[in-house]
Image 1 (tube, rainbow, N blue to C red):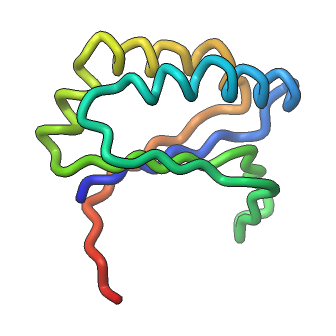
Image 2 (image 1 turned 120 degrees about the vertical axis):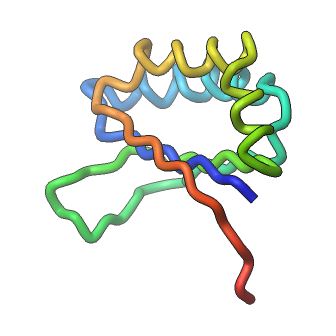
Length: 103
């Protein structure tokens, strides 16, 4: 499985971030082709790095790299990525990982 882990730093206006994420960004992400799973954090995000406050964590799951590439390269994927500039005022970090189930 290929996973995209997105961490959003604390935005200038957390209430506006939450509203935009819920009402605009989630619907954009759900339209992305090849998406097998989409999870977001609920409630506060604890971090071992006290200097890096995190507002929200999202995890997108794809079957493989080709599916991820096709999804991001689609009009729907491009729209979701472009939307980040509209609400992620606290910064965003995107990690792409290959995952395997151990237990």
